[in-house]
Image (cartoon, rainbow, N blue to C red; front, side):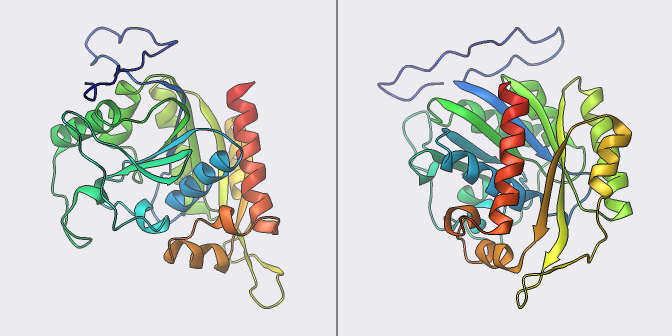
Length: 280
């Protein structure tokens, strides 16, 4: 679809869908990056939010698509949960955090934050198509797609519908159980015949709010070892920083307000490693 008075951008570099699969939607985006985890509680949405913010801070035009349909939290993390997308005749405008960072989420369409979404697969597939096709994203360098934990309908649908999917970033914590689920996520991406851009180890040590030292609450190095064992890239680690947690709770993008801190540098390094993998 296209908004009244605007021509729809053409997709470049895409190919027709294989027989039996739905056709790719038409949108002007260079790189679609899926962010997923094998289990919940690893800070995947926090990573997605800060990666998107870091890319935007480095001058990229970025869309952030919250596809955790049953538990959308990204608008809260960015302080835009009270905003609503402008609805045009046949399209919607995403909510903008900055001039080059736009967000779309199911949270914008619910009557209040306590309203549950009780949908089966076909309804989720339909809304994912709408979020891709009927939102005026404009011309994007990156579309960061924050997926729910696990390997369900949302990941399958976005992989089938979105153009120019470069691959997936897997978020884990150092704990053995999280790493085990991250291995499953890597194998899931392999079955979709997509690239694993890399593994990110989140909560890799906690930054002490008093002395700024690091405490290994959940161990350390599990994500890097998993990447080595699986033969996939390791994008880096991000510590568990109370300042980042507080920023998310208060709706203040951490990387936009805490430049030059060790945690900011960790996020920036992960972002730079992702860009090298995707754009090289």
